[in-house]
Length: 153
Length: 153
DNA sequence: TCAGGCTCAGGAATATTATTCTGTTTTAGA
DNA sequence: TCTAAAACAGAATAATATTCCTGAGCCTGA
Image 1 (cartoon, each protein chain N blue to C red):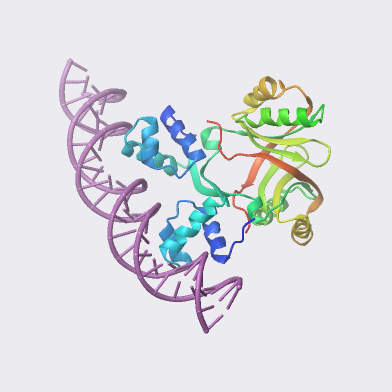
Image 2: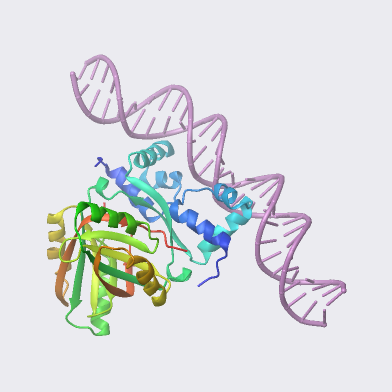
């Protein structure tokens, strides 16, 4: 954890919303000159506070119509089998998020696919193929009301 | 939904992973000159396939230690009360994602806060203050194994 | 209190990149 | 096959990123 002053926070808030802003545009808004602004941005990248710069796509316009949250638990909870499972599951591109939840040694996955049939195929032919899965329960998203990547600083 | 050819997909895949790539760098990798590459990127922005360009921060380095998924259902499900609720809840910066689910609970929220005490405060003093919430159940994330913003094209 | 070193801001110079323009090639449809 | 529209390459220009140098404030130790 790194100390951030108010200027850093302003910079991060701007870039969390629009990473295409030029150093000059940011400098103007926060009342600094370009080079210290630029230096600060670079430091924030160097110390890993800024992890990446990405574009976000409109999911529906690229034909991805299904979001599902999938809860699952493992048969065996030994360190070995758990980490093997975690390694295997991480690579699937359909799975956007994986979290380990409190409660019953459970995982929750966020899965995005083209349609229900594709979702079904993914579960059957890829996910369920993994040994060590005890059970699987899916909740489908009816409506995505908010999807935010900007953290509150 | 817009038709994407193979070149568009390559471009989007690159930018989904690193939006700082220059048009020239992309052009080189896909074997085009700069100007058509540049045109394509601009069209993808214009037609809304590319929604935004953002930086992603390291959650733990900025002191956000708690991720929680919160299931809740409403007392009244009329169109009016639902949309009033949706409007109110969308503005909270602690809430990163809101989805309406199939099944038992109406909504699932992804909430990120500094620590458990902050989480508690948020629930008590902001979320639970909303009328029309019937019940609330939180699952805490023990470990975040994957957080991906790039869709599979 | 003072001198030295450190961090940070400002400004100017240079290197890269974005952006626009023009003319050519390719493609798709009649 | 012909025509119109779209896609492409290459060059010129504008804007931005990036580097470098300078000076001001501020610890810190003697």
